Image (cartoon, rainbow, N blue to C red):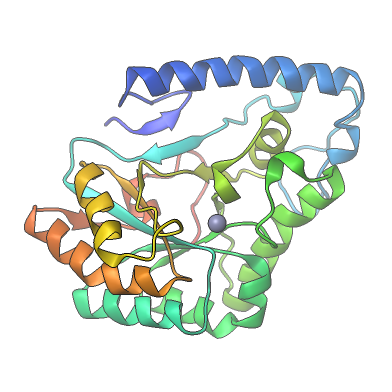
Length: 273
Ligand SMILES: [Zn+2]
């Protein structure tokens, strides 16, 4: 089976493969340098939060991450006619509820990457998402760009949302989507230590740019291929408006719909909801 999961199994595009190899080479160099300077010393996670071994300051990155794979996924297998709808930035009291209704009517399962501060305000929506058979992922607490946040706050951004989801639903999700798709060596190491799996996307609906439902639908239709992970946001009315047409058209093209855990089997750890 072929998946677009960086370092190990990515096969879909030569250009993307080259990009990620360059990135990883760069990130290892940068992280190692940062570590040797002691800059990452304060980023050791709380022992109660992760099952990874305790981390000592100045420990080389290779030792620190020994046995821990770093996974960055942006598409599923090209051999199956499956796509994954993903909704970011919610839960939103109005639009998430509407999206859930449409998905239920259409018999489609999806994955919701929630922002912690919204999840805290609307925990009932987290439970509704899970009880309808969808999956939950972490999208930081306050939708912060991971590349520009301080070490202490980075930990908080990663952990708080996971804790809220766990407290409210009992599900300990390891799915993580970085806001703006932005991450660097420091945040990648923090995510890897916590066994969080980075899930990006291969199709951008651009529902965050346009308020035209028709344009959103065309963006998805024109770029979807087997294994596509489709980026949508359950915080915009135009996304709600576009959704029935998107599902209808993808169904007509023979696609089935999967959650991220269904599409991308867990490499080492259980995915959680
Ligand atoms: Zn977002």
